Length: 114
Image (cartoon, rainbow, N blue to C red):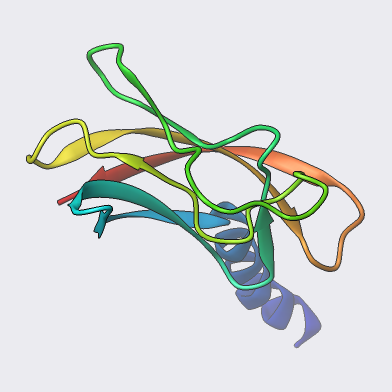
């Protein structure tokens, strides 16, 4: 019984660890933007601001947004300009810290934005 319960919980834990943030298209300052929305209990690092690496070699820095008093974390979801009006695919690199942990991590997430 314990082994089967553990087998059910491990994929759930791995899924939760694998998605610290998601990338969405939104409007900011009257224009189309890419916004990094942190997952529940996640703080995004402002010292290592998120970036989106596109297949053609372009890099979009998602470093706009309010930061905490010590400039360590984003107080609001970080964003950057949408490089085109079309769907995007690439690698989102993000530094993040979970609220219950005393260390931060980095993640490379494959993303598609319609």
